[in-house]
Picture (tube, rainbow, N blue to C red):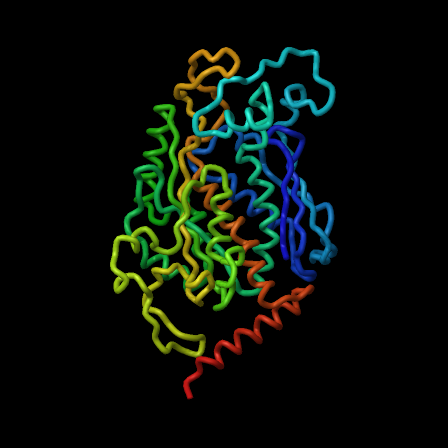
Length: 398
């Protein structure tokens, strides 16, 4: 099975990642990895850090002649801002320079609890690892998994449906048109917008909302719409809690910094309706299996893929660092203070949508490998094609 780990601090020398379990034979290119990193750095409302870093990954192992070789792939992303932090983030001997401790936590951040949990007298170590800067390593690692899925005809894409109070007007028809060509087609259209929203009017409303928040020293969150196309029926399982695909997908999304809610299909809307208006009716369909006229279940029934497009939503809260800080206190003196200000974005929802695409890729890839097995891409594809043919035969009209 595929698993990955990341390491590194926000202002340390570099971020790194190790990806283990990728089948051999997957075509990998630096452009593919770095394009995903560039997508993560874009978006209206980003802060000054994006002007400093131009993320590029260096592959250190696991790839030969442009293809994976079955061994762990390791990657490294240099932090260009490290040169300005060599004293504050010195790794061994403590510098003679006076480095003031950060002792005023930010509400909504890992600062306070992390400081207590790990026994720090300074919040800086918490800030460094809890930072969403870590997601650059995740995006790089998971770009390899997306390449694997793409080879298997499975695509992942997303767009942003709301930023703050700027909610997109209905674009469901356009979404369906794009998804018919694959989720990455949808993602490319979203990438053309500085806020990853579909439709110029929606984009303009979101940009205005971000400008207003910036002027007020505030921040904005939003809603991400994520789609996975090409996944066959039967990935995942209902037999044990830790094999339920919907739980694994939700876990992956909620692991992203500042994501506080996940929805599968139209789950919250469904909860307010009777079952007759919720469940997706089945029809005989075509050679590809049964058909459904609706997809309220979001492509998952009984914790397994049902052959429809997988549709997930993620809710990102506003970033915890505000330029107009909230009330807090000094953990040393216990005196009331306004919270600490760290360099921050006004809005990072567009970036979060790219990260959401990344972190769901290993979940789907592992569900696929559990079904097909295979140590080489050719084995996986051969077994997947046989499984697809088996599905088609079962639903073929006599």
